[in-house]
Image (tube, rainbow, N blue to C red; front, side, top):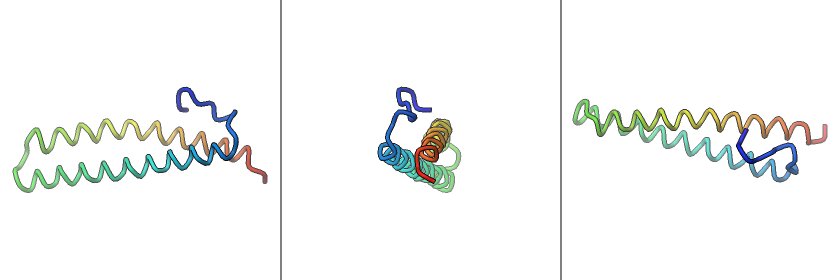
Length: 88
């Protein structure tokens, strides 16, 4: 769960806003990872193996991927709380 945010005290409207924000963050992350993979492929195709165009983007991908785990957990917590608060 996101540090500093208690989803159990939020209203359903606020939870929906948080859910949309987390979903947008997932999409942005996926686009950024795709771009970095493209940089790696382009760098390998044109210049071969090198620090700047292969290892640096690969390191950034690893850092971004670690953050996506937290985003998925946050989104799951938001959706679970929304499931509790929405009428059946």
